[in-house]
Image (cartoon, one colour):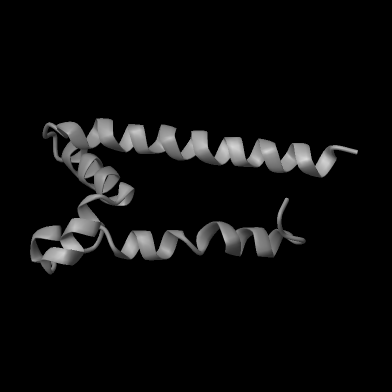
Length: 94
């Protein structure tokens, strides 16, 4: 609702995903990263989801990574659903 076209909405939706994906354990283990980058990558929701997914696919216990990734999903959904509802109500309030 903040942009004028479908293409702009697509770009706005994915522009934040690329840095988060690259600063995660999706491509490289965080153990091989510099300390400052590993700290950021370990807190990244993509790292938690990647670690949980790898563990499940390899028949291992995902440990807390599964629950942390679920918590991230619920948290992100709650924040952005609230923002979307507010934007929708402001746009249609007339």
